[in-house]
Picture 1 (tube, one colour):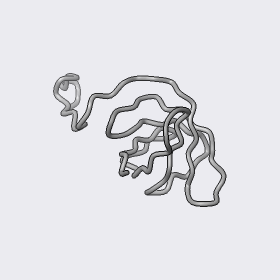
Picture 2 (cartoon, rainbow, N blue to C red; picture 1 turned 45 degrees about the vertical axis):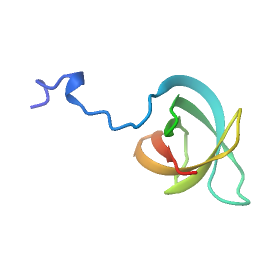
Picture 3 (cartoon, rainbow, N blue to C red; picture 1 turned 180 degrees about the vertical axis):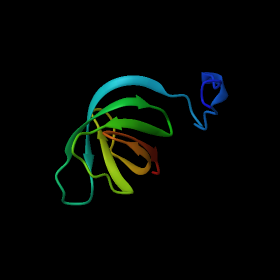
Length: 89
């Protein structure tokens, strides 16, 4: 069934161009909670793709990048240790 699908058959719904990267960051799940380590593997003006082990990601959280200000995020999808988030601030 999927054998006839090609890469170009999928629609990219992103509103901004993404850039592959491998940056350390922190993820925080609420005021007063300790930030946890994560890795940003892809970033755009609209959001991030993150890898974080042993983390139960809530629908809203803060990502603390190594440079710049913390960003408020909304969980968009999750597969195993990887998840995508949309910036909402």
